[in-house]
Image 1 (cartoon, rainbow, N blue to C red):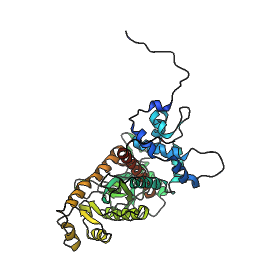
Image 2 (image 1 turned 90 degrees about the horizontal axis):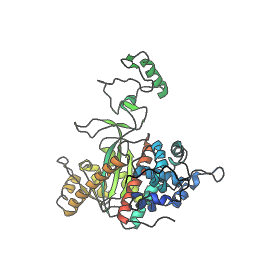
Image 3 (image 1 turned 90 degrees about the vertical axis):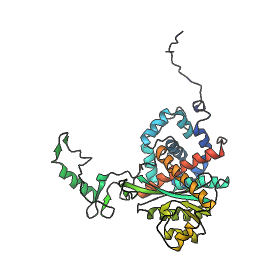
Image 4 (image 1 turned 180 degrees about the vertical axis):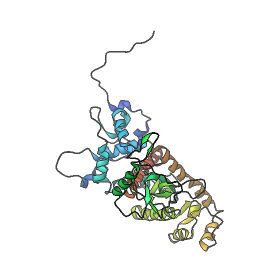
Length: 387
């Protein structure tokens, strides 16, 4: 017999948010790894002891982590997900009768409290220290860099020689467009018409008005075109693919990767007292100064060699090519590229949402935190729920 819809809606429901989250849901495995009390302690100095109670800071960070885990990087869409996604609501700690916040809550708290506090870097470091305490971090690492699109367009790049206020310069450019019309009507005042065909533009002559820290970035091959972007570097331990460090550099060809890797090694030594025994890298790291830096730090350079380079440092790297440890490092170092691909496909690393080097670095630490939480949840298995 064909069933019929029950038109009588229930007025009261005796249910819990737990019933909406399946037992095998990934958020269930990640939630116990986040310490709410640690977040509150880290945020204590950022809030006044008197006044109207704010939104709990741990809920803001849980919402950001949950959003990036689900591939939701937009604050407006995140608020919508909080309204209708019961698993995310359970992850954040919002009851059924509580309303989601306004989207501006995230941007205002970032601007007023979190951007310059280094909280996201601290939370990222906590996952690394947790992995080290569990014995998951080996002494063999891999390093690599990738190019990430900046939140800026080609139209935003203007000659550096312009000596006037950016807003004034944009007004002058838009005033030149007022008389221009096309078949579809007048020009859009918010998206001015720019014809830069035939114009030679480079990082030495042009800067973006939207994001002055980004540069024209390219892999350097004829098959890839330059685009506004940054260089993102990462240091990964080889056993369980735990990220030991992430960093963002202004694009400077291959130098941004090599110098960024050195900064990550120094950072690991300073923050974790961690020194690797070997480092795997691609051909971009086969450079004299970088190799000598590794030898001074007593780190074995398991770097893919090229035909160029006849210095003593290059010869010492080539001597290690036939070793079993070298071959294992070269096989493991490709896993860091898998992490970059995972972050770009699912967690918002393909294109930054924020602008400016400081804010972009904060976004990168958030993505790195998410990736490490996923690895810990996978390796450690189910954890007891937080009290």
